[in-house]
Image (cartoon, rainbow, N blue to C red; front, top):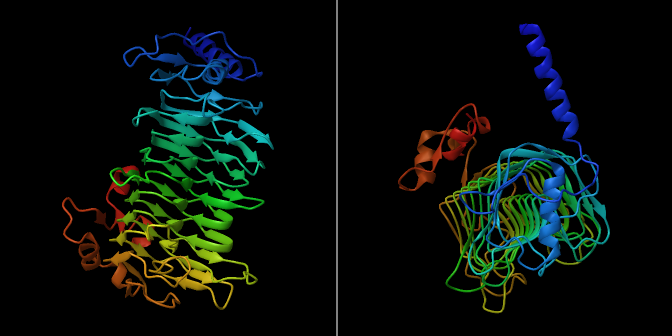
Amino acid sequence: MKKLFLILILVQLAFTAMAAAWDGTIASGYASGAGTSADPYLISTPQQLAYLANQANAANGNTQAKYFKLTADIDLSNMPWTPIGTSATNYFGGVFDGDNHSIANIYINDATTLYSGLFGYVNGKSAVNAIVKNLTITSGTLTVTNSASCNGAFAGRAIYTQFINCKNKINVKGFNNVGGIVGVLGASTSTCILEYCSNVGTISASGAGLHVGGLVGNSAVNNGKNSNSYIRFSFNTGVVSAITNAGGVVGSNSGNLTIQECYNTGNISAVNNAAGGIVGYGYGLLNVLNSYNTGAVKQINSGVPKTSLNAGILGYPGGNAEGKYFSAITNCYNIGMVTAAKTASIAEAIAGALKGGDLTIDGTGTVVNSYYLSTLAVTNSNGGIAKTNDELKLKDFVKLINNSQKPEVWVIDSKINNGYPILKWQISANK
């Protein structure tokens, strides 16, 4: 009897797995739910997920302030996927909780899509009301060659949006604005938050190849002086490559952004200019706090007609009309090798420069309590402080980089990061 019961269970599981495959059809509704916080729409099949995309793309604001929840892992079976929200008028504006499930075999491969990802265009409207959380994209293809497109595994473009505990494992390739999580984050004064997110996929661009980042391709958030967006408690381990503006966390930033307690271990390269372990190109009120890079950073084209800036934390501090280059890099370190192909190009350990993009106007950026491996070949320290390999692994150094912060941010675990300091939240993340 026990054997028969076990066989029936296995048959049921096999049938369930077979039933999960998708043929491209769309359901006529959700599994259940009223779309409220207490009673979200429940999604358990690819057909129902496609129904959500159909609803978001059918009418302006049709998902605004509605709640959705996955109840099972979803296999999209490499069928062509239409993103959830395809434009600024047909967008996703609700709360999507993956409930720690995964999506496999997502497939987007075309030359026309403007906003590419599981979600295309996400907009919470006047506050950070749109949320995508607790979800892993495990496999699939995302390749778009439209020069005007925004491409990310989770979203092409996001405004007034939070991404929480989103994990990407697929390769993402676009033309411009390519990120492991989001292609373009924010616009104008829209606050956005990305936290506890990660990317392990290869992130790259063809064509013009501008603005490519391990987590975010192009951050254009919060040009208003009284607002700020955040990327925090997140990391990239994937290879990132661009023609111009490649960063381990963010490819380019042009607004008010704080990157806090993030790290990169992936190799970063730009053909022409602006490669950085954390940010490739950045200005405005950009703050990088308590973050580190161990990945190699490289500019690879010796034929670049102008000076190239590349660095372990912030590659190129470009300026804007208000003279804002970046605010500060504080309590950070870099041990990744930084190289530039052209003799006149600059390879620095922390920041490519403290001046503006044309290197003729003094900038406002400062480097505070930040360190680099003394064996790195750098032109100028630009405020960074050299430490030997042994010094970087001492408890005294952990105390130094913690800089009296309470509670402490930095710790050492000999089993993680080859004994170099790590962020305290990594301890629980590795358990």
